[in-house]
Length: 343
View 1 (cartoon, rainbow, N blue to C red):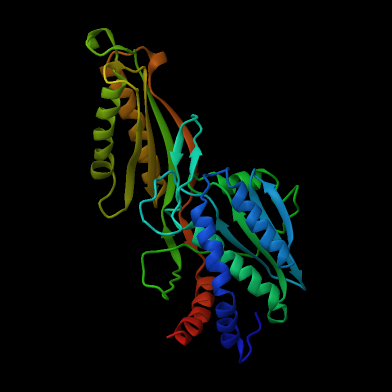
View 2 (spheres, helix red, strand yellow):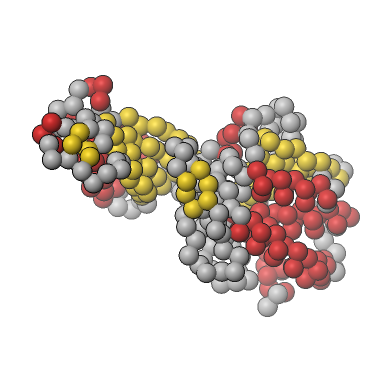
């Protein structure tokens, strides 16, 4: 971007001019959250805004993904990505624009939903940046691409967009630089950008324990998957504490336990939804193999036949975030001038 002596003032003026507009967009998205691959309303709003700013918009990439492209001379090619989906969480903030929406899960169950991870802010930020770049084309040259990515929470959306033809069928230029931002629990007005590995890699696993259901008063005639799952949850905790180097960071989270419906009926299955966080591939492998061994050991201890051993579904994963040092240095140089001018 070609800086001018009035650049910082121009940014401040643009922010103040559009503050109310993007606050309204943020509140609207917050009030109407959508789960991964269900972001039809959010995607339509992003597409509409980008078209209004003059972007060439491609829709339905990887189900609900959006790409807005603006060409303005020669290279570089810069991509800015924001995620769109929400969490299956009930909002209790009491905000006047709090979510009261619900959504349908893969299993057909209804769940309350909210933006508990900041994707409403990410989307509003992206649209604000897109509008500013459209209105200040004399400041920059090259190609800029804005991406509304679905399904970040289940760690499937980016891959779905690429597999859905982002760079092939939709002919989106491959970026020279790729940017994204995330909310954080820091003071308003603060911004941070750090080089190197900054955020953990992650996996989403669904483990299903299979048993033999029956009547609660006759557990001797059953193979109780809830008891197996409970034993597994406790044993998983020893993987990080006893198999990972204490100098390294890793986390195993069991975020959901789903089994049965009635007080006195033993179900035939129990589902554990697991999330892993890691920085080293060997730690990832240690956790995944440890979970598998624990599951099989419990099944063996309960004398299950091989066809009823626990099954694992790998739903999605991502590498650790590794910020380019030279690009981060460039960003921080620009950020310091902008952030310092605001104080």
